[in-house]
Image 1: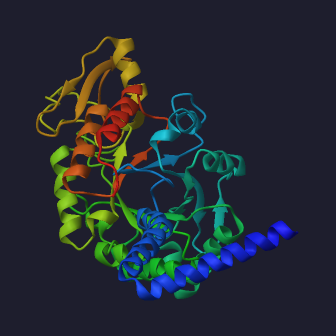
Image 2 (image 1 turned 135 degrees about the horizontal axis):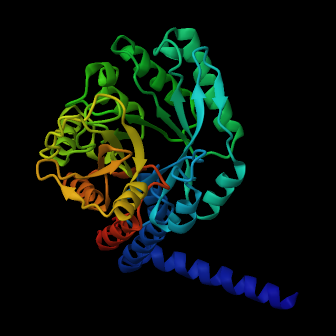
Amino acid sequence: MNTVRKWSRFLSGLWKSYIHILKRDRMVQVASGLGAALLLAVILVPAITSWRMSPLSKPGSNRDMAVLGYYDEGGNSPDFPSSFPSVEAHHQLMDAISPVWYTVMADGSLKARSPKPDLVAYAHSKGLKVYPLFNNDLSGDKAGALKTAATRSTAVSNIVDLIRKGDYDGVHIDFQLVPSSSRDALTAFISELRDKLPRNKPLSMAVFPKIGIDPSVSGAYDYAALAKKVEFLVMMAYDRHSESSKAGPVSPNNWVEDNIKEFLKSGVPANKLVVAVGTYGYDWPTSPTGASLGGGGGDGTSGGAKSTPTKQALKIVSDMGVAIKHDSASGNPYFEYTQGGTTRVVWFQDSKMLYNRLGLVRRYKLKGIAIWRLGYEEPAFWETLAKDLGKGKTRK
């Protein structure tokens, strides 16, 4: 006990001496001020950096590009596998995942698609954030829950309740084919959702690009207004040609860049824009004329195409012994093969296209990329991503 009293008297005397010197010595005053400032920096800088890097970057990440992966449980066919093996093998190259788990119905209720708490726990154990995806019901009126203020409010309340109760890190909205007449209603929905969500639960949104897309698909997006309400927008930079169109490049390089420029010109900040990268393609039957399929066009039949994961497309190349061609106009790969007497053409997205997209993200100083979807990609995809992230500058 005596030892404690001695130390207490010693420290008290030392502190009084310091205060006495501090009052008289200008140099000590300056040094003390610098020391206090340094201490505050040590405490506050990590917190400020963490806040600035939010909401997409992994805690402690020093990469200059964020990576979001869309997650799906897969289909009945082995050609359309679960996304989990990709998360398990490559979580270190991602910052967050967005599982496709919920649909907002026309009355504002939510339809769950087998959400898995075990996946959320696993993702968190690997430092990944989890932003469940909420899409819109397309089975009836495409305006869905946006149709009235009451159904919008119901949808918002249900989403907020789910996020508050669940172990989720935020919300990702993916409303597609919303009629242009619902443009203001969509913006109002996003604004109300942002206001009702806890501030530490980021809100983000996937949107179709504008250039080269029919207004019936992109007309409902007020890009600048939406960007003010969300933490980031994901530009779905694919489906320039799809199963409902004639054969052609799925994601032409020049088309993607033109749309990036359009987003920035329309008022979307570069640090809020994420470019979605596809890991799939489409397999079309060709027309009876057998016309040329190069040059970014082709004469595939309207409709009749089927979605094909990139690794499945490359398996067809290997099994059939056909050659991959690269279209100089679009920068997209394609190939032809014959099955059951029918000649087919496959346009798809590969790791070379990922390389191009990463270059665009860096050139325009965008926030990062999103992968649609995990499980469809070939091994070279991750090799390309790892190489690029490794050479990137660290955040400051």
